[in-house]
Length: 314
Length: 283
Image 1 (cartoon, rainbow over the protein chains, first blue to last red):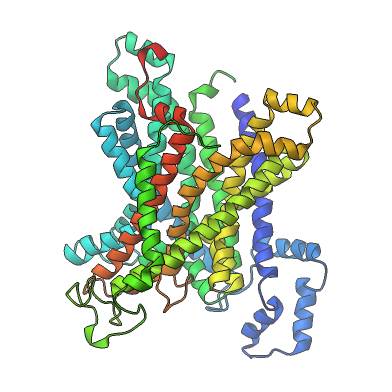
Image 2 (image 1 turned 45 degrees about the vertical axis):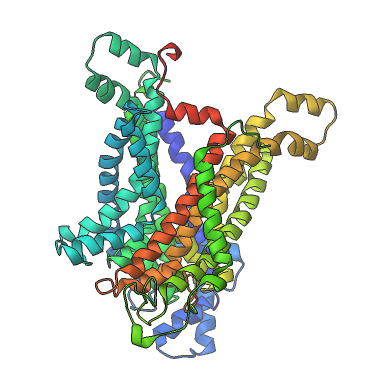
């Protein structure tokens, strides 16, 4: 019962954020220099100066002549129906472009996050178990260096080593599993720096628990104490952080997607900002914000079910 | 305010790195061997040699001079943006922490800002304002402040619940007086710490936007732009992007070390807690 209650509470707190995301996307269009109706018509009629009557008519239809609140409602209604306008660059509906981009982005983000967890959890745990010793200091040093390097610098180093020197992997592209290796590794290594530190801190705090002393007193092997008892309690904060990271990787991996020509939503955003294709920019903002909210929610729900502290009812 | 018992080593190291880089940036015109935008087309993509100590780029410009001049926009913009965001965030956070009525609204607004990765919000601002220095400052300031607001709010709330605040209030002190004497001294060290670490993040963001061609506009030298231009000639002249990346990494590390050192000094308890193994008697 209490699990259900906290889950519902969590969903409820995200509703205002979702509304905020839609307002942000709407305002980006409202604040954009130029008249959206004219921009749309210029593209639609393929003329430099569309007739004023047509512009006026479209403004009426799209609700741009009324107050900003009414405009927002009109825009939201159209957005919910899946009508976000057409891309000026390609002429395709924005929703089609977004649908093509969200898949690759989600693939890259999920692989990168899985790799991050695979690197950070063992590293952080090892550092915590050997706190103060040489292993710990080396791990902290690596984490400091990795957290100072921008992900695109690591990407360039990887391209130089694996693509140009060793010729093992292609420089850029999309479609095969080996195209995924370099972008995912660049993102994962940089993200795992902070994640490993968090894992270490969380593990250190858990290891102070009395039940760890009990487990050791029972004569359990150290691997069981750490792996089964401690990890269960140390992991939830890290999972929450990983969720935030995953949310930020959808659309946030802009530079990496651009370097590796990965057809994700981050690259779509950059291309549309460069060409000032406002309808696509707006669609990207809406998608990225929503994706973040959904992923955070999913991570928190998993956390609620995983965290043993929820089992006892409170 | 800051009364550390012990100066942390990483603080000294970080501060040394930052000062060295900042001084090099300030005296760049005196120490740079060439004009950063002067092209030597006969010496394109040269490796380091006697004439050009760090080689030349695809237009034959001296890499060492360009890297030196690039310190200015990177550190200058990053520090400006951090000042703007920390002061804004601190004000919002203290307001939310002191005023229960505003708290819910301000924190929901903060949540909305946190729903976008920093670079996405920055790109959105640049889409509206167009690339340029003013656009860049705005683009980095808008996504930056919520983090400060969060921290300032939680510290303010803890400070406000203290008994000393109750005492001062019962003696008839006004809200502003309480904020000045009881809240600010608590908030200030925390904000300084995350600001110092935050400058590093801003330098990365400036370089990232420069890399995408949406930050500092060429031909002005900037680390991110130097890297992206060097990417196409990576096979012939790998030193250009690698050196630029190294500059970013060292500068960011300087700020991170300073920030972490500051944190250890401001809050020595957390430092010990993180580093040491739990003692048996503590359990």
